[in-house]
Image (cartoon, rainbow, N blue to C red; front, side):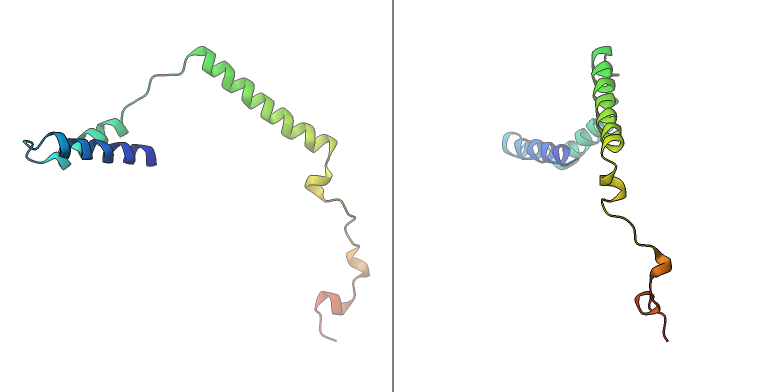
Length: 95
């Protein structure tokens, strides 16, 4: 979105420098930016779909492999304390 706004700003500056005969260059630039924003792009070709699927498969393999081989990153590396051994003071229960 930032790129599209920057491009429309550059178009506006170019219009103001080159063409003084336009009655309202701001409306013309906004109209062009609006058309470019809602333009439907062409569908991706087969090669790009294949590469996207391979990249996605590699990413999921990496994530699931590391969850399987190193679960300490998810579950923690230390034992969880037994809550039945906690005192009332540790639990915040008044005496």
